[in-house]
Length: 113
Length: 111
Image 1 (cartoon, rainbow over the protein chains, first blue to last red):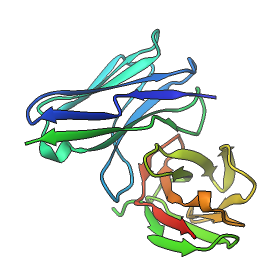
Image 2: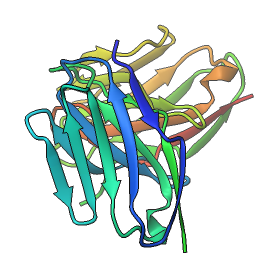
Image 3: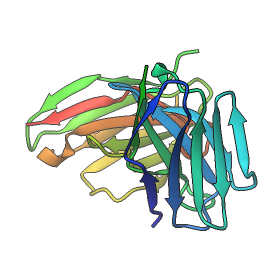
Image 4: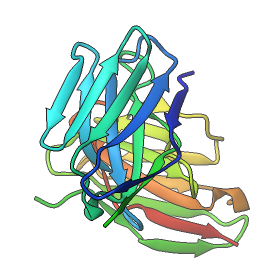
């Protein structure tokens, strides 16, 4: 089955700096890669996603890049703010046409004011 | 519009008991997925239902079952609870694909 590796497990940045979280996946047939933000005591919130026919996608301060050849994708957050502090999860759809997501183990991002 | 709702919020059970968790999807969403999230880990896929049919099942024992109703709400049932079933159970709704919008979860504690 699909395996998703996520790094780093923890990340501390100064407010205003950029943060980058990286994930690799194993199934070359995977074609959907969402990123979720989970705050304490809440369910995961979809913040951005990318499909395999696109190399990069941006939404304000958040961007995701995908390298299908290397089977890795990354989340980039610019101009970080304290409210960006949370656990971030990457996921992939476990192969084309699959209805399940396989998640990474998460990255705890701390933005220091 | 209301997001995905789940009930109850918290639940405490003892080993061997049975539990039923409920999920109401976003209006217009016909797919509901269930995930188990153990503390410190990413969510793990249990089931997906679409139009009341099971479309996918993760690597969970037969003690776990689910169903989807005509109004697209869903129930997750777990029989013969084990200590290891203690987790946050998440429901996600979507139009039909993987993932989607997650609810706040039900925190299950098995003693």
